[in-house]
Amino acid sequence: MRPLTLLLLLAFAALADSFVPLAARRRAAAAALRAKKRPGEDAAEDAEGDANEWFAKEYGDQIPEQLNPPKELTMEEALAKDPAIEDIKKGNYFRGPALGMDDPLDAPWRLEAAAEIEELVKEKYPDAQAVDVLWAFSNVQITVTPKEDANVPLSSAVIEMLTRAISDDLFPAEPELAHDHWLTMHALSVCTPGASNVITTQEQFEAYKGFQVDVVTLGMPKSDGFAGVPGKTLTGTLHGRTTEEVHLNQKGRIVKVPIAMVSEVRLPEPELENGDKWAGEPMFSMEFPMDDE
Image (cartoon, rainbow, N blue to C red):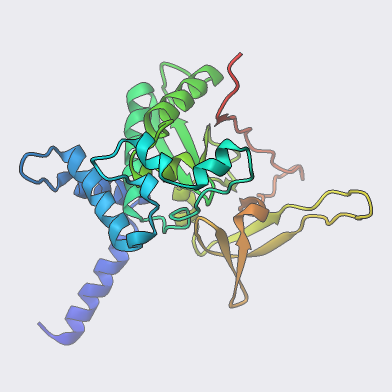
């Protein structure tokens, strides 16, 4: 094969791969984890083992013992060995480890958790057409899009049911594995799609790379002795998103906006014939933990 032909084929393959939907790539990656089997183990156990091996490789001895205790110890015994527990019991200020929360979006534990969330949502709510998992440093947002001909509307009661189901299944009160602990450190919210010109899902952040967007930042309210700072709008080309930042290309310069300071990322508003601005559709969401009354 001629070198030029080979280069063209490689370029075409890379281009074709870029058009594979993120959800499909995520499911394929998670399926690959599940597909690997060891003698005497089922696929779920093997996927869990792969995630643990990844943690050990990435972090080694940095993982606190209480997150992955030796098999001969119970969780209570492992926690009792950690002196930081005394600070918690005394009510002193305690900050949990942030280890792992800044892992890349394709970290095995994120892929596995996202696949489990999608599977659980479609099991509990068969009328779900799409399930998107959007990771941030300290929270995870699940956006559920119902089918157009859904038999059961995606009501507040359904959102509450899904929120509780996901939290009970994936956010254990007593995590036994390192990646379980990472999940417990995230605030969980389940929502419906919002205005169609506002980018709210990971699928959309991937699809609109290279498009012009407006990043609206949060302001700081007035207080005693402080005049406050108004929010502002940054316009540029969407370059990407991580769990911590939105990357915007402004005339060749990459601007990194911390997600904690982002109010919303939106496409330019379409102009209507009558001059009115388009309002879009409201988004309903529910966060966990919820107060039981």
